Amino acid sequence: MKKIVAVSTLALLLAGCNPGDQEAEKDTKTEEQANQNADEKVAQDNEKSDAEVAKEKEAAEAKKEAEAQAEAEKKAEEQAAADKKAAEEKAAEEKAAEEKAAEDKADESTTEDKTDETAEEKKDDGKTDSAQDPEPSKPSKPESETPDVDKSDTKADLSLGELVVVNKKYSLPIDYKPSDLVVPDVSFSYSGVLEQSYMRAPAAKQMEKMFADAKAANITLNAVSGFRSGARQTVLYNNYVARDGKEAADQYSARPGHSEHQTGLVFDISAPSVGNGLTAALGDTKEGKWIANNAAKYGFIVRYDRGFQSRTGYTYEPWHIRYVGVGPATQIKNNGQTLEEYMKVGH
Ligand SMILES: [Zn+2]
Image 1: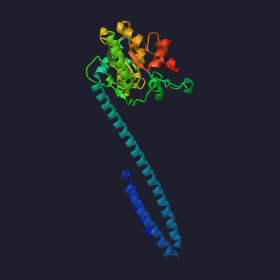
Image 2: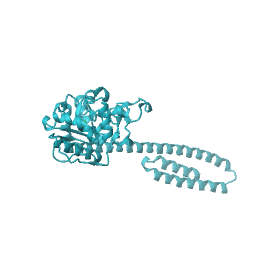
Image 3: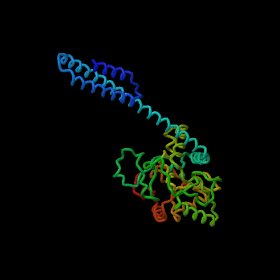
């Protein structure tokens, strides 16, 4: 009978189990099982006679009961584990949402000028800086290597350095940020330093030369917008989609990760003659013409030149210059190529 009492106690203890008390429950169970085992041993040692059959029957029943109880306990533990996991996942989701909200808030508060810039770009017949803002970009590997399963999410090949291709097909990781960003020593269209004031050091150095030479030629240029983080692009793009719808937004804004500005190799530049606007009209000014004729000497290309729309996916952007190095820039300009054509990748 002792055995049955022990098992019943175990059953009662287990029945009262709280999923949150798994450890305590286990301990209790282990203890009870130890007691039970001890009881069984005593029974085996001392009782051999007439009650043996009855005992064996009791033992079988007790064992059965214990097994059922163990099964119930196991289920309870599994449920508890599932509940715990669900709670953890929910907490993680909430935390991620909070962090994103905080980031977006911080982003907006520090980049008011960018919004203006983007608005300006958009005014330009929705042709803004599409190269950088609109769609995903491609890696610079042969297209044959990457099945066309998801054009919008092919990874850009950062190992190409200043020749990395980021466009509607090839994208950068959202958190990618160059480690050598600096603020070029040139004139800007605004005062103060913002995220968009930065550019990768090698490109910045060349832009300084370019601006200095332009000034010497009585050409006044102003830097407007350089580096743009994936987080910032996400905010901009989402705002556009909310305002104009996805289809329209894709015509003038790059999707997150697909803005060439995130490479840190790009600067939107303009001139006082067009109010420092990012507008196609810049292309017809003496400043715009100077840029088109001279940028390659400093390693820059007008990334979305006239007539390039079907070859880049972006409309004419005389203000968006991309650093690729003097050699490639010269070759690209002389051949009338797009960066995609030069790199032999899609767009
Ligand atoms: Zn741009």
